[in-house]
Length: 311
Ligand code: CP
Image 1 (cartoon, rainbow, N blue to C red):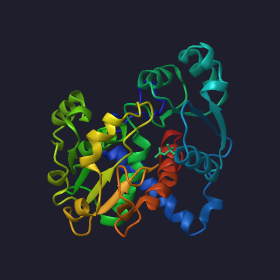
Image 2 (image 1 turned 90 degrees about the vertical axis):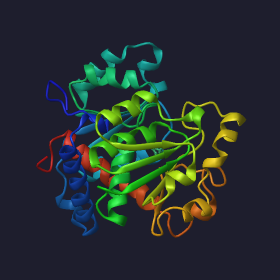
Image 3 (image 1 turned 180 degrees about the vertical axis):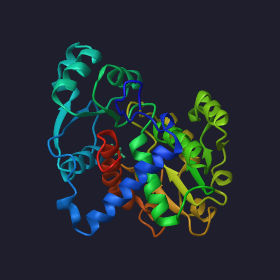
Image 4 (image 1 turned 120 degrees about the horizontal axis):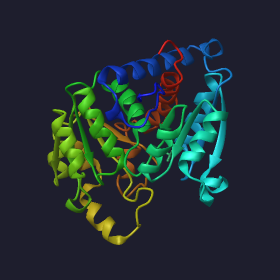
């Protein structure tokens, strides 16, 4: 939330545990109703329009927000950075104020986190962070939903991250603080978790453990999570690949986690790089449930931002 009552969804750290739980519960309820075919009665966003601003490519985020908004009765508008005056020097502030006169909510994917925050500062309608270089909160809402569907309440459980400490990992750190689970992070020293983020986690009383040893991180973990070696905005260089090879999730690493551990990946994946085909296509992998849950999580987020479904 923000001072003027506009319900932005910018980062998990901005919310209390109770608020996030409310959104997750709504997502689960909306999902259950969809499964029962009760979609037709479940359209609280009739007459509302979501602007979807993409300065970067997307498959899951784009389709899940688009379909999610439509299934809730609303309309969507797809805008790409290069097609907008934003790409020709119009300020983010002016863009925010103009879009706010046309649409009911704005979803934005842009690498520059500061520009996303600036958009939210000037918008008078809710702004949703659909990935910046700093964080990816909507992804982790779907991941939490997925974990709990497969393994029950996440509180007190252990999630292990092996790989580049990127934007997705940052939102996992925020989630660990709010949902009271242990997060073990294995990353190479050169691609490790930013110190301010670890300081934040510590100040929040979160249990976030950092190591350079993937085997130490996954020991006893209920979920093993990784992401691609080259995130949006990174240079695709051999040095990066060399650093990340010891963090590849393979069958041997999965065997060091809890016996019933799930494997998660936000996708897109690169088989043979950050994860072997054997693991990502194997019985412990829940990647397509995770991808599906983007849809249900987006609906919970949209309902919260637009004060629908009693939220
Ligand atoms: N996981 C995720 O955000 O996927 P897209 O980049 O395809 O939206």
